Length: 570
Image (cartoon, rainbow, N blue to C red; front, side):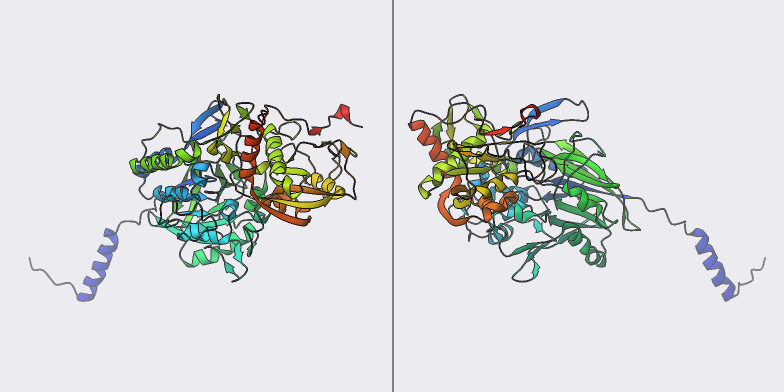
């Protein structure tokens, strides 16, 4: 049979047709899983510590030892075996208000630990500003030029700073008019660009000393976060993760999926974020939760390394968009995961280097534990003790009244069975190293100051000033805002305060600068910085009481602050 050649044009058309038939239909894009792990409010807790929580699994309240960088390292190592491209992030307050084992060395071991754990980025928290702008930048960049020369570069002589990126979209350096720190960092995992955006609570100036935030301006969190999206989109980012150092609270269990009763400052911020943002990792309030706010996932992992939040993002790689976000809070129980040997070894070295100084005895106290709970009246046994030490440390400067803010008392004073406190136990109570300031206030100003303890429509017992011996008052939570202190009840050494008389009041430098919104103290006159550190006044007071044969401390509050009940009302 004779074969006839196919014309060239027809051959070309046939080739195209056959090629089209041979090409399979493009497959539907398979969603990509991006795994993140989040840690917030670590506060220099290098070693494990007590953690009390309720799990959704059994609703039973448990108290365990949890955390420690060795335990965290084991969990991260195990999870990276599941996904080598896992992204580990922080959310502020990684340092500051730290146990003595970290604070003793200017928190450098905690920053080194985060480096070893492979952290990529973290928002700053308010405590990153405790020592001021220059010290924060040193913690990022490294070096030994520090406001804490007695502590910096003492653990190792060549502190190199954080290998992770501190971020703050809403913090402006007023000298330059530019952001103090980067607003975001882009990480890539499984071919997807993830925009990590950091912000700190806009009210940072109310919870940090004036010196700590000097030269800085703190803007609205939601506005600053939203403003980063065009820049990120221009770089091909379609998946956004917000690291927001602001939080809320809920009565739901720490591991309750999709909890729905979250309240607090973070809720308002989340509701004002761009709709493209569907995940907010929060912090600051030291709560554990996995909530939904207007459909967005909002997480927090309590504090101190007691928990880590595992987050899974399901991403459409074609649309470059988030499909879904889910999370679980995992309690870091020692023994659950095999620690990374290098991290475990580093923890042991910090313990050994710190042990001699921290275990040095200070003074005997009257009871094994002096607690800081303010439930009921608003006063605490430990609050009494710290306020008394404040007055003790500032009496030579003319102080008549000593005040202490609850937020500055970080842990119970636990001496143990031998009733002898040591350096580490004392520093755990008042870890900031603030100096004591004495100011003059009128009796009328002091009454206004006391009213500032309850800024809202509802008066709570957890935001009170602690007061020194000889000072007392009564308050009624059912009265209107601004009129809750019972008239005529404010007494100093048995005598009612007079509105027009001046009194010398001592407080730590944070509180005296108007911290925790106690603006009356910032308006005080004849301001005197005693140069006495709060921790030194605390220890010296315990020593003086022990030497006098009257060890300080009590299991219960002394009754200086009395909450009037309904049947006691005038």
